[in-house]
Length: 100
Image 1 (cartoon, helix red, strand yellow):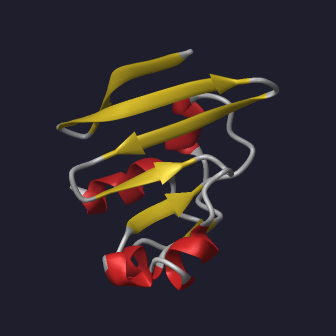
Image 2: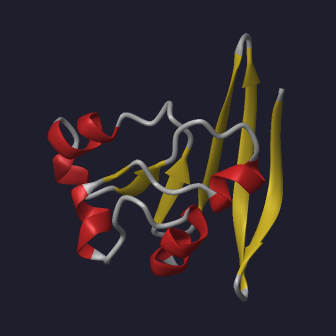
């Protein structure tokens, strides 16, 4: 099952997506510029194989809900996210505010 819901961060309304799969759930919250995602996101792939796309993204691991994704410290970020000041350890919500 796929669900989408509005997520409020600061004064911004973003898009939260939850994809329930067998034995796992994919989570993402996106802005018009970038997104944060659960541990399924391959940051290395984005930085290496897809570097020409300049993707702004970050990953948090061990999260099971969109609320947890917002609150969790980021485990890894893309090079393009770093250029915006997004760094591992900051919360997902703080990273999203830099992406809007």
